[in-house]
Length: 298
Image 1 (spheres, rainbow, N blue to C red):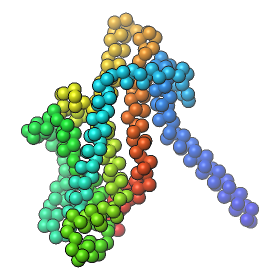
Image 2 (image 1 turned 90 degrees about the vertical axis):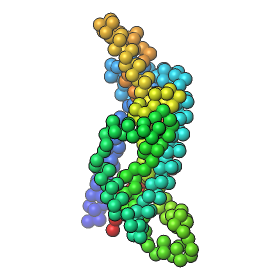
Image 3 (image 1 turned 120 degrees about the horizontal axis):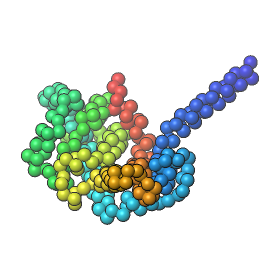
Image 4 (image 1 turned 180 degrees about the vertical axis):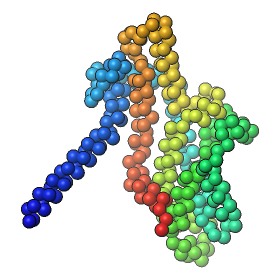
């Protein structure tokens, strides 16, 4: 009987491992394929001949992307935006979330209702642009930071997390003479590190990947971000290929031996994903725990 149970367990475990390995392969292969495309000759890419390894290894795609001198300063601005924007956003979101959990705050219900409505109702692009322009934020670095300083979803996650903490901790700190800022930064923040890490990751990824506000609100080249500059390179490569095809009636191998939109797109994806992959391992141990704490309320 024991042998039968052991055989069943081994069979069950083996099938599970095979299914999980297959699922992992299906999940990771698209990213792996993008990496291989970025290191492959563009002509093979446009033919769809890249599968598990480069047919002809080359760094040409990266050289073409990085030959634009404006890319380096754009990367610096993107890093500054991500660091400053994430720091200010997490701090302001935490303070607002803490305020909305205090029962003695008379406007708590009204503001909670207001932020919930803002999740479903948007003013639209034109009113938003007019507002940003009226505030004098167009063509400035702060247009990347201030309009998105507080995210409603992040406020809800933090508020739910704080509401789940024992009220006795806060009362004990107040009895010791702590003011609201001391309660927040000495009691709430250390306990809420998993949720803070989760919101930090959400904010940093959002800031790093953002480019549309650059397109809408800034017309000065010295304020362009990395994502926007990469998009310009992609559009230029696409335009170059289309112009060649329209003038000759076909796409010859000479026109794509240096660059194709597919190869540039894969290279850009690898470039912008790499910094996130460096940050994520440091926050991973907090991420799942923080997401669950902020999403579940007993």
